[in-house]
Length: 367
Ligand SMILES: [Zn+2]
Image (tube, rainbow, N blue to C red; front, side):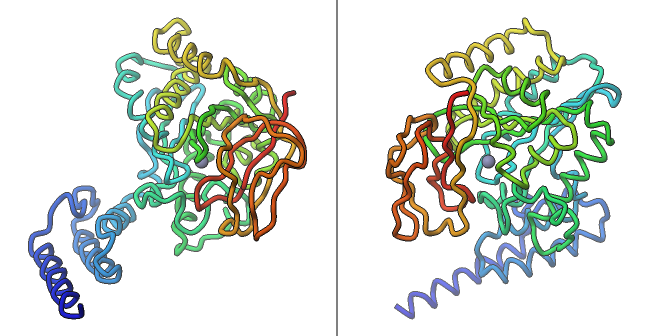
């Protein structure tokens, strides 16, 4: 057994040194270095981290170091279209690194959108959220990026926390570079997915314009939910006066989620005035959102949030999904060997079926 392991180690070392002698462009991205001297720094960083990671996740570490060498804000920009003057819409995918569908939806919309927009007054920005977490395929690395949008975190410059780097870059990009303090002129659409099966819905920030934007999707929309989630970009930007909506498109990493999020983007671009209402993509997208929501309640409000401090000890009972009716006192989950009962009747929202998460479930009721 030990001998086998020794052979395995020797093979890994051989493999490693072989890679050193033949650096490949797909192994480390050297193409984006602004200064040629930094190539060697990157190269050394890659080697150090490769050794430190015991030969695991080489690609991740190399990509991560490659990204560090770029402008920290630049890595969050997928594309931008239009001119600086006028209204702005910011469409962001991947705030959580395991939610790749938002980025996929943006990439699906972009080629057609570029053909449609000859010239436009205003700007459309497509952003990527937690880039290191997206590369690692994790919801987040150290801290949930979508719970960090609070002054205490925004002022914390700890460079060792990767999620802080993403927070500061995105904050600076959205607040200063894009909106330039003119929040009334800025719309924020945050694309998400969830671990539960089925359902699509919108969450407005707590201002009137956000509520109207959320209502316009034709899918269920939930009031008072953003207020119960401190530290979300939704709430932070909404409080600054931006029209802000989270659009939850479906189950993580399913084709339906990408399709629904794509429809949400087309709808939003028309809603914001960048596209004609009668454009086939817009008409079809609105019909799709209407069809998939036809049996769901439309206007809801939050009645209960089951917040988790120790999510490791939480286990949702099987079979729950978004908008499944629940009765008061129904056995919903087990937490620390205790049964968690529903505090009221209503509908289930976002039951947690993944390891990482700060909320077990939400109960909503029709308004
Ligand atoms: Zn999310």
